[in-house]
Amino acid sequence: MLGPHLNAPTAPILRRRTLQHLVLMLLVLVGLTACGSSTVGGGYNPTTPTNVFEQGLFDQLGSDVVVIASVNLGAPSRNYLKKREFFVDSRITEYLKDAGFEVRPQREFSQRWNNAVLIYGDPVDPTTGRVNQKTFIQIVQAVRDQLREQTDVGSIIFTDIIEKDVYYEQGLNRVTRFDGVTRKPAVQGAGSGVTSGFDWSRAVAAATLRAAWFDMDLGRIYYGEGGMDVTDAVDTRSGTAFVRRRDVLESESHIDEGIALAFHPIIPMKKWPGSP
Image 1 (cartoon, rainbow, N blue to C red):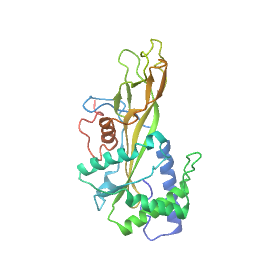
Image 2 (spheres, helix red, strand yellow; image 1 turned 135 degrees about the horizontal axis):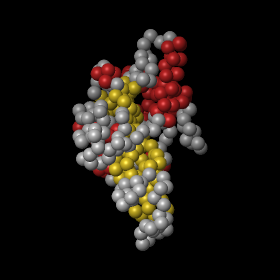
Image 3 (cartoon, rainbow, N blue to C red; image 1 turned 180 degrees about the vertical axis):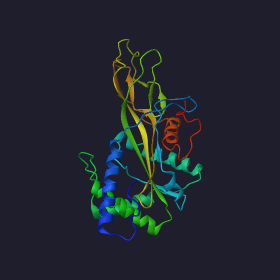
Image 4 (cartoon, one colour; image 1 turned 90 degrees about the horizontal axis):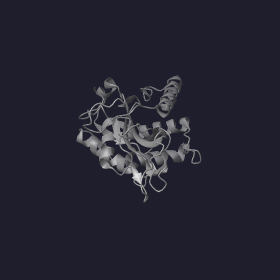
């Protein structure tokens, strides 16, 4: 949990402890890696993540009104993934609404975030992409305070698109399973195809959705991951290498599957692939 009751009668010791808890939680989230999963209706997938749901904190929420943060909880997404963040968040918005939540416009968060950055400074180093955790936490707390005072938002959801290395299985059935999904190789280029000597043992990049949900005391209600799609394709021009796909995260069905996995069980997923 991220440090409950930040707005209780404030004492310096309590605030220091809360900041320490926030820093620890952020470091855990940034460093955490999860297993994977399979396509909707595809049956059991041993890579399906075990997501964390604090039912007690969820039950204490006084509102079904949520806002999706306009920034990552961890480091910023890579540029080619960042281009798809708005679309992914729009699909998450629809998913939350279908589950009965009221989703406030993202500008409720982004405007307050941008104003706080003018006061505290940008927590992200534009050169390295590293996040100054102390500054980040100060801004999150400032945004939370304003949301609590000025809006009816009852909780905040961070939605990070992260990338990790995965591997294709050996044999005739070339698929990769990661974070609950099963994906076939993508092929790109005008060449004659994949050579018989192609090295399928190399790592291939894949995108996963990481969701973190917090109440207005910044207690962590939920943490989950769900695989979306591979972001590398077999390069048919060379026939021997992987290259970045031109159509990164273009498949709506793959994105929707990753969302459903990342939000299970706080929003139960139909045909969840985690049960044998």
